[in-house]
Image 1 (cartoon, rainbow over the protein chains, first blue to last red):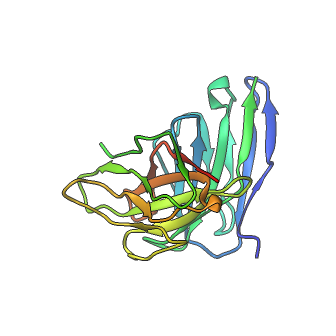
Image 2 (cartoon, each protein chain N blue to C red):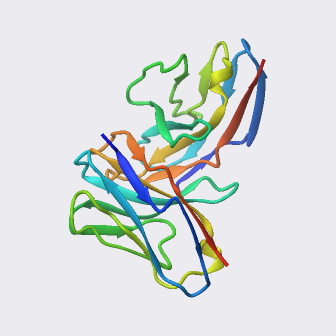
Amino acid sequence: NAGVTQTPKFQVLKTGQSMTLQCAQDMNHEYMSWYRQDPGMGLRLIHYSVGAGITDQGEVPNGYNVSRSTTEDFPLRLLSAAPSQTSVYFCASTRGQGGAAFFGQGTRLTVV
Amino acid sequence: AQRVTQPEKLLSVFKGAPVELKCNYSYSGSPELFWYVQYSRQRLQLLLRHISRESIKGFTADLNKGETSFHLKKPFAQEEDSAMYYCALNIGGAQKLVFGQGTRLTINP
């Protein structure tokens, strides 16, 4: 049972490039979300989804897009990378309200 | 606004000593609080949730609505408790978590 799988683990982008961070879960969880982790700031919610076809913005959504075409997958797209998006990104999934969030191993992104 | 504050970025205690990691929150609704832990080279994982009122790995946490706190406690620290600890507040049924800044706990032998 893989749980939540994120790819890639590391990525370096040039300013202005676009890319997609992949997230997949095999636990049939309804809820999925993306967070970014910056030094001294904990994790901040970027976007989240309550089910296939339904997404919404979190605290820091600017510069990111998401879609949820299937229950399993929740990709995060950076439209035009900026140095301010250098961070560690975590994907999480949750079975339902009040449940534990299961996290991926993280993607360390550097924008130069 | 919703906020979670962990006042200690770093906490160092000796093995066998009591540990308390502080967490305070600000939220107008009924709070749903969690402690997550990240051990070295492992992914973030749930340690405790207030609704369960359970003890995991010897840790307990009690929600104090009067003081808006959810401090994590363990009476006798062990070296394997060294990790990064995050307090988190769920502000939406869809598991919208607001995290504190985290406390790095180091247990000295």
